[in-house]
Image (cartoon, rainbow, N blue to C red; front, side, top):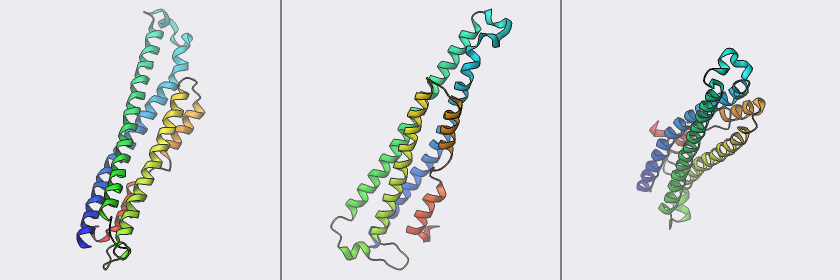
Length: 193
């Protein structure tokens, strides 16, 4: 039992490493989203040649600026897609940790699965905590993917209210904060903190 709990502790440590990566990805994704939204908000101004005054005839400046902004938007959207792929990799890693953990307890008796020693958690509780962490992150990933899809549709027909609402949804809950993950970890392995 003690050896099995140590293995679970290693699994939870891997999860904590994934959470650090998740936080970095969240910061990057929000930053990309804000940058892309800013560019989209500039499109109407750049498309109106009256905004350029005497510069509108200077070496096709309005067209060049608009093209440059469109290129920048395309680059940001590609970066957002890559960041989403990294979110997906974290979810895949969490899924593998859960599957490997279930393999660890294969063949254990009902009593062994629910047995506790002092303040140490049962094996069932360890598995449930890992599954909860996986489910939280998988749901969050799906939300981010949906927001990205909606954002891509808005780039063709921009609406500042919709862009603002998407950005607010991305920044607000449900985002997974380190404290939420730590609370699950602390319940499972309280003596480590």
